Length: 266
Length: 323
Image 1 (cartoon, chains in turn cyan, purple):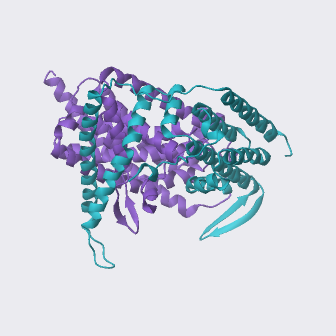
Image 2 (tube, chains in turn blue, red):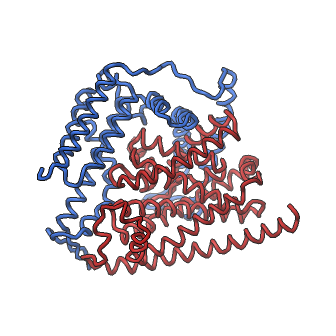
Image 3 (tube, one colour):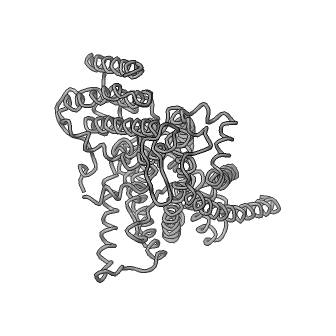
């Protein structure tokens, strides 16, 4: 399996790709924060936030539909918020009869539900944009600069490096099981539920041992090449003028979204 | 490649951004940051640079192991979350860092879980699972193999329930979901997910103990600090066992207590939680959820009582033997 099966980085040359990864990480966090702070039903504020995402998508030559397509990932969980539809007191606007239950959708509930949905949807799109325009090692480097503990960043770097190797190993184990699990049409193969669980457990245990032993070999190989506990990069980042300018502009934009979102009647 | 994305999403616990309110997200970040900070300090002091490649590869292992599934019934499948397994095999601090890395990568690389709410996700899936998994397993050091595996299974199941309960409570405190729906639903689903977790954890642990017993025993051997881990694990388990039925069976009372403490009032713009008279009659749901929660609670309490007596007996025997 190749790295690209997992990695969401979208290679291109654009203003957004060239930005310092720190700026992109900070902007992403502040954008999500701004969405959280916008009051329920601040549609103009949400709309402007979406405009910012569209702008970013165009400026990074990803195209308008890119973040939209990938943003659907958060939708299933957002259904957890569906209960607010019926639970906030307000004027009833619709009724749903499910079996013995009579669910009354209120206007306040609908407002809150759609606001939560929009917030979640906008936030995911910004995160998609961040990952699509920033290489993962650069992203980690930015996290290090933003005071995420070095040990954690090193661990994640190793994890990222071996993610694909071990995922490959897991796929091989799954394939091997499938190859040995012949079954006649319409019949299940294998034994009882505990038996199936034990097979899966043995696979996980096998994978554990292979990973553990591999980490030993990796450490020895790195030690032989002068590893002393820190990972070096040949990609030193430094904030350029344009990075500061972009950061400042987006901060001002987000601030104005907050103000606009709070104007009553909009 | 289609099944890959499905395999990568083991359970419904990765909360996306926008679903938790800011105070709840910040509170969770504070707890998570404190624990991770201590873990980082500990690993720096106690284990050298050798641990970093090990933990990185083991984080990748947890990620890959979450892809391993087994068919249960009707198209559903059992998965591994891995918190308890990581804690038991790698030790608590390393386990926490490994699980934190896994959840961070899932959020950063795959948008599986949000960024502002990442603190909550790490807490629910990475830290609570490790604390419960390690604490309970630690209590069985020196016991028979069957006993250790049995407790590992209970710990794995409880760790998933703890994560689900914490997620549900955070959603409720954020004003995103109703307490009387979200708690029974999350716990009900994860009671089943947890069984898959327990079965795979026990089988994987048995396999590792059979092939490389030296790896796992190294984690439970150091005597120092063992009692504290056991206490934390037991306390958290007790909290899960006590809160789950309480929150499911008597949501009104639970909310009133939360309001009395001043927890709910501050954290919420959730006007509905103050009103006890809901507009809808959830008769069937509530009865079912109460029965379910009661059964789960009873099961958990029974397991815990057995465990506590074992621990007490063991600490007595170590005292008399002058250890």
